[in-house]
Image 1 (cartoon, helix red, strand yellow):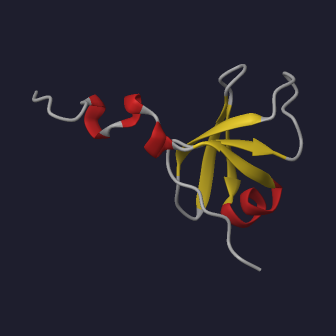
Image 2 (cartoon, one colour):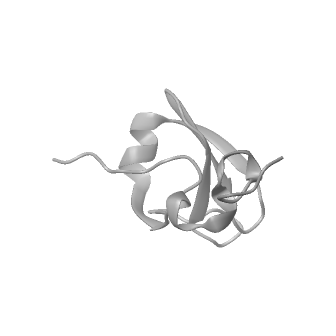
Image 3 (spheres, one colour):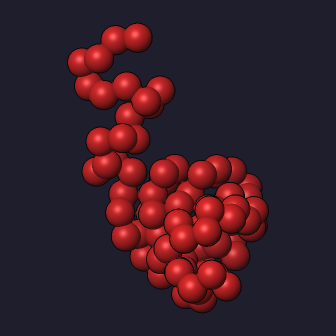
Amino acid sequence: MERKQFELGDIVQMKKQHPCGTNEMEIIRMGMDIRIKCTGCKHSVLIPRAKFEKNMKKVLRSAASRPDSAPGGLLDGEQA
């Protein structure tokens, strides 16, 4: 089975919804554990990578496609 592809800043859909009613989460930290933040109530949860991969349905919005996700908060061509 192919591993699911996701990266920091992606908005993902989970199999079970959060108690606030939404099942969309943003990936805010990656490592052996993954920290996700609910897009509804902004609550964050740290879960093991294996459990995250099992419970993630799909990537809804990739961080690479969003203009506000540039490293350091700068857009292409801008200087600090």
